[in-house]
Image 1 (cartoon, rainbow, N blue to C red):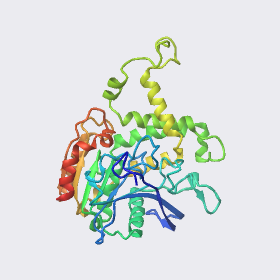
Image 2: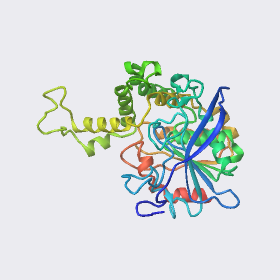
Image 3: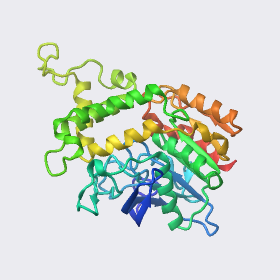
Image 4: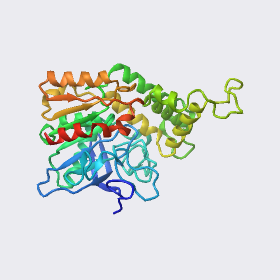
Length: 372
């Protein structure tokens, strides 16, 4: 294993399979597979596992690289590895791809979703795939962990939608979780403003004629709607400081004044377009819709008193998607329910995504929390 690029070096995706999985709704999915990654080693007592739950457009690839040629490591590479906050000399770190993973066209993502083949028809499910809940995600993750001999978690850590999963873990399996690290968290339920905002992410896909009510796998993909959806998601996850400091008002091309023609763009427009189109290449439109619906429905408020884990919330001061006020409300609600909860604010200029890119500033706080 090389350590030339990152703390955990080269990593590989592993695959868990089960003949069927029964959802909370009562529906059953057959021939289920879940991709996952591990870093570090499980100790003999089996009590040193930290589960990392990923964000909306993320995967289980949270550290290391698949090959030396990879341009970027996993999204929390600065957090995970020997001597880092999630110290792989001490902890066994596991991360699992969600059902309906947004990036289902990525060859490293193998988890079942709408783009998977329905064993009854041998065609992609499309909208025949049942809706999933956040509780379904954590129950599927528990199956993977049990297959590895893990019954209890030292901690569950996750950013954004991962923070929602972490709270769901503590509410659904209170005896299996000692600590919850909720990074860039929402509230204990998705509030109406977030629900409406997520709907705006869904609309470009629903309005793309190639979406075809989810049945597009044998024809043209709804690429324009998907890219427009990912464009909105990208902007919501950033802050205006990012646009101001990175691009200002400069044009995409000095020879093409944006004020002189509709097709002439500012540099910031072109950059966001490029990001969205790049992400769309490995994304599945139906999966975006399914994950969006699941996040809209997230709600653990009525089960807070079940939580026995200690909780640390890490909001970002400039977050314009999951506002710092959401984390404050979460801490208040947890304390009122008798849960030990605290908060540490990441001071960073570029918004929501700094919960991924600037998490290292909370290293000492995270270490204290994991050691307490």
